[in-house]
Length: 159
Image (cartoon, rainbow, N blue to C red):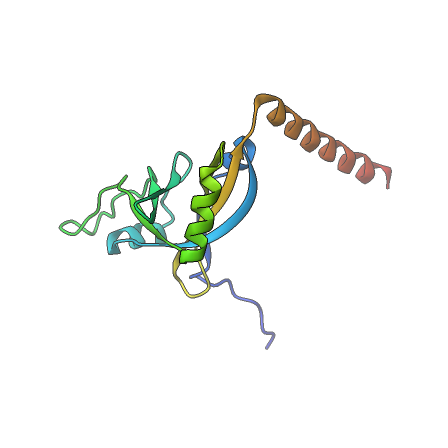
């Protein structure tokens, strides 16, 4: 019997902020843990979340995820959660100091890129240390992407 590779139900992408790579130039990424309530984890396992309008901020020596949306879990009637509450992110002291130092520079921000479950089934958030792009930079990115598509199309047709 052939040993096929099964997809791990724990390891899955829940939400992705695709707009972030368009609006920001990502300089570095950090994986952070996230403190969640039980009903939030259940809702994430169903694949419901939105991190498109959210951001991370260092407040009073702690890292917080602000304005992320995790809908209420219907079966958790009495022990539900607030959908847009501030959620504490878990990083090491060294990473927190690095984030604080980078965001204190002008134009730098912490943007959530992906919300997912790792191999152990723990919810993780991939954060990007980013600098906002100007309109001209966004146009340049679009031109590069379009040229790459055209080049691939030409090479494919040439064969």
